[in-house]
Length: 342
Image (cartoon, rainbow, N blue to C red; front, top):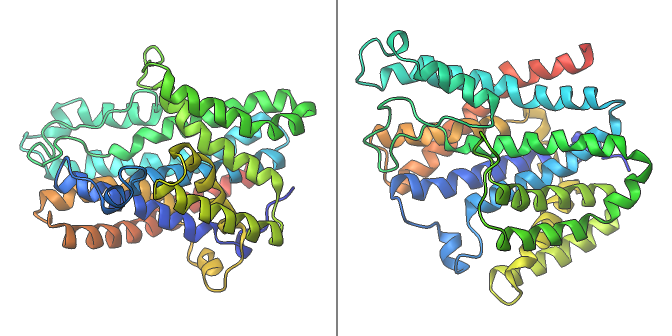
C-alpha cells in the first residue's frame, strides 16, 4: 500500500513536534540533573517528553522507511537512500561542533592542532557503533558535564534497523506473512526488554535491550504503514488509540499498552490531511537538524548562563528550529538530490 504524498499529510509537523519533545525532556536534565519533566510527574513516570519523542520518531521512521523499502528495487538502492538521509547532515553537524564552535569553548591552547579528540569525535560518531560524546574540557563545568551531543546515541539503532531490512529483501515472497506477524514480534520484544540482562555487542556500545525496546516502535510503524492510508480507518484508529493512550498514561491500563497506543496515535495522525498543518512541507523538514543539534545548543545555552528553565527551553527550541531549517536547506535537501543521480 503506497503512502500518500508528503504534501497531503501531517508527518512533517509531527516530526518537528517530536524533536521539540526531546528538547523539552532534555531541558530539565541539562539545567537541573536528577529532575524530571512535567509529563513524568503527571503520569507517575509512565511517560516522559524525551522518551515519547524518541519513540514517536522510531514509529514514524518504521512507517516511512517501510514505504522506501517497497519503492526500492534492490537492497543497495535502499541502503544508499537511507544513508543519504543520515550521514551528510551528521557529518556537517560533527565538523561544526568539533572544529568551529568547540575551539572557542576550551581552555586548552591550540586545541585543534595538538589534540586528537576533535578528529576522533568526527570519525567515531560517523561510524555510529561507539560514539564519542566529549571533547576535552568543553562543558566540563555544566551541571551535566562534558557531554556535547547526547542525542546521537539513537542513530546507531536507526541505522541498524535499516541494515536488517536485508532479510526482508531476501524473503520478499513471505513479506505479507512477516508484516502481519509484526504485532506478535512487538509483544515478544517488549517482554524481552524487561527480562533480558543488559548486554553490549562486542567492540560497540550497542545495548541489546535498546535494540529490543526501540524495535518495538519501529515495527509498529512498519505494521501500521502496511495497513495503508484509509481515511475512515485513520480516524477510527486515531480515536481508539488516543483513548488507550490517555488510559495508559493515567495508570488505568497497564504500561505495556503504551507500545501499541502511542505508535497508533502518531502514525494515524500522520496519515491525516489537516488544513494548514499538512502544509508544513512547504518550508522544508527541519526535524533531523533539530534533533542532532538540539542537545549541543542546550548545553551551550547552559554554559552561557541560560539555565533558568523558563528561558532556556523556549530559546533552545527557537535556535534549534532555525538551525534545523538551515541544515535541511543547505545540507540535507542537497544530499537527497543524489538519490536520483545515483
